[in-house]
Every structure is written in structure tokens, then in C-alpha cells.
Image (cartoon, rainbow, N blue to C red; front, side, top):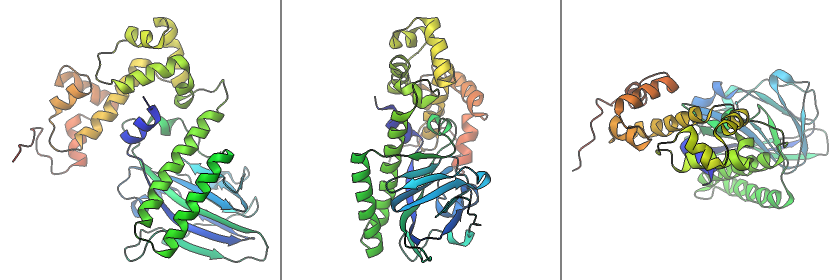
Length: 333
């Protein structure tokens, strides 16, 4: 079971590359918090992540509210802001810039990305692309909750080679106006994000905690794979401990320490994430969805959904499908 892929499917990861920047030092550019522009760049997404991928040259990236702790980027590096924080990209540390909100709009009469050229007085050229990744944050996105507000991926030589090559191809295709170039860029952003997360997992310290670290743990990772592979199974603490190859007490303590949630709490939250996605698809009754995620009765499912999500499943569905009138299955032709 590929847990990372399973989560990315469930939280509906989508990508878009908006800006293709060719700049020469000195330069500085500010990006706003994605909350202020999400409706313009990725209106279908519940949560928007921001990233910058450096194809050539070097520069600095920093959170807008923490301008004293800049991160240096070199060719092949990618910096990601999972919480969508405002940030600054510059040719030297300590530079500041206010974002231009008028830039952030999905065009109707031209292709993405927008291509910008900035000519400074220096001799260092810098080429980077900037984009966004949309995903669901609720009811439960374990990946999003386990990432730092800013992190840089130092790609391996092999990964850097193919990733930078693909970024160049996609950027060239967009500039030439090739058919399907925007879709190519979107998919490339998603592939790039997965590669970055894989590298991030590999580089985590042995004593780190959190969901990503738990995936590397031989015992806890096996239990999480079992939950994701068979979410509707009637799991108990004992059966999950058996899957992990640990005693009940050791497993419960180790899972909570690694993941930050109890095993049964994690199971319940993940089931609600799966159920929430099904509730947005017309045709299935709440009773049917309840059975699909492991509940023997609609009443038990309703109680769990309200416990973890805060609203009953019917209210969740109506908020996302305003035309939803009832929970009856839609009849076939």
C-alpha cells in the first residue's frame, strides 16, 4: 500500500504553475498569503500551497513575517510553503517587497504561466518558476499537518536532473504556446511535490516525530498501511497491534508518540476523510457511505462524523452540493 499516494488522492491534490521568472540581480519579489488569492488562482481548492522551483542561479527565500531567517536556494532547489504563508524571493538576504495582488488572476485569453523579465545591474541570471498546489484540508489531511511552514528540498543528483529537465521542457512549451502545455505544467507541479515530499521523508532525523516519520517506522508504518488498505475493516486496538507486530500497550504508546494521535482516533479521522469525498458525489445514500467506511449503522456513522468533523454528514453534503435535497440514491435511467 502506497500511503502517500493514497492520501494525495483522497485530499485531491492539484497543481498549477503561474509564473515563469527570468531575473537579474538585484531583484526582490513578494508573494501574498494564499488565503488572499486562493479564489483567483485555484478557486476549486479548499487549501492552497505555494512553491518556487529554481532552475538556474541562486537566490534567497524567506517568510514575510520572519525576514531575518532567509533560506538560500541554488539551482535545482525547491522551496514550499505548505500553510500558504506570504514570502519574499530576492537576490540577497534582508530585502523586502510588497506583493502586487493584481498579478494573481487566472487568465481567460492566454496560457499560464505569466513570463516575467527583470533586468538588474548585476551579472547573475536567475530563472525560477512559481506555482500553487490545491488540496483539501478538512476533514483530515495528515500530510498537511505534518509539514513545516517552509522547507527546502535539496534534490539528489538523479532527481534534480530529471526534475529540472522537465521544468525546462514545460516552461519552454508554455512560452511556445504548445497545446496542452498548461495541463503539462499542472501535472508537473504535482509530480514535483511528490518528489519533494519523498526527499523530505528520507532526510528526516531518526528521532523525528509526526505522520511522515511514522511512515518510516517498520511497525507503525505497517499499521497505517493496514488502515489505508482496508479502512472498512472492523479494526480494534488489538487487531491493529497484531498487524504492527507489537503488544497492545506498546503499540498504542508508540503510535501516539509517532503520529500524535491514538490509533483509533487516526482510523476515525481517515474514515471521515474518505466519507467526506463520497458525500460530494451524488448518488450514494449516507447509509451506503457509512457501510463503505466501516460503520454497521447510519446512526453510528452520523455520531462519528459529527464528532470528528463538527457537523452531521447531511449538513456537510448540503454545504458542498447546494442542490442536494435528500440522501436517496439517484435512480438509473
